[in-house]
Length: 110
Image 1: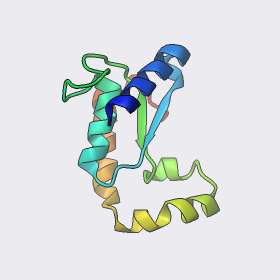
Image 2: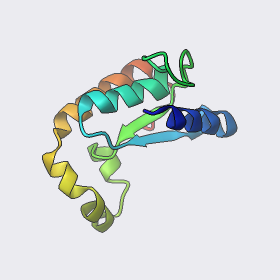
Image 3: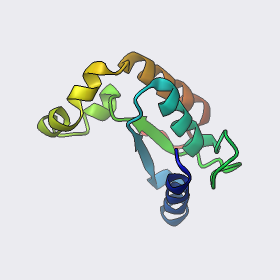
């Protein structure tokens, strides 16, 4: 997650409260998705951005997770995401996101 997005997430969490913010990622692999989730939940593990040492505990999900997929109109999801979903390792992404949430998320939706 780049520094500007870290700044935005931090500002939203401060403005609306971390229990009212959900981060949705679309990274191409489990490792990148997990890094983004860890950043918004437990702080920037690279110690480079605005979330360094900031444990927001935000709910963070990936767009291809089955429970998240259900949030979207099926036609819109098919048009915008389904092609990428076919080439991603969805099981790896789901596993990584689930692991990170179970370890760091203070405000899960499920």
